[in-house]
Image (tube, helix red, strand yellow):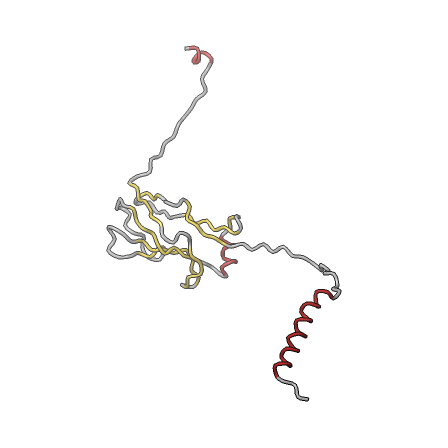
Amino acid sequence: MRTSPHSIARSLAVCLLALVFARPLLPQAPQVKIGSLDLAIGGIQATVTPASPVIPKNIASGVQVVVTQNGNQLTPAQIAQYLGGTFQLVGEYSGPGLTQTIEVPQSPPPPNSLLVNLPLSNLRFVINNAPVFDVSPSAITVQVIDQVLVTSVETTPLTLDQIHD
């Protein structure tokens, strides 16, 4: 007696179905928890503060970049350790009154005798002239103002007679 290929395939299908449905019925060992781990994943972020800096003309100045990791501000030494070496913060000035893009801080600063808003773009951290970390946002507008207004107030305590007068 010869067995047909269809009957062999049917028999295999029945056996596979029996195994699939019988497996959940077999007793299983209870799961044992052998440990757990809480892994905090955080990033590093560099931002310009304030977002729209103001620089007085003809006074050496710059923009402040704050680097944070998990909400904590990093020191320059911590930034260097994170980035893997001594770093430099660079950007490029462009805009009205400039004949070409000026890279700062390597190039001489732009002639800020102009009273304009200068775009400062491509802000980034570099190590050995290679960019390693971008500042967010990578482009800001720096407002150049004519003069800084410095005020002061002097107070003197009043005597009782002066108060009554």
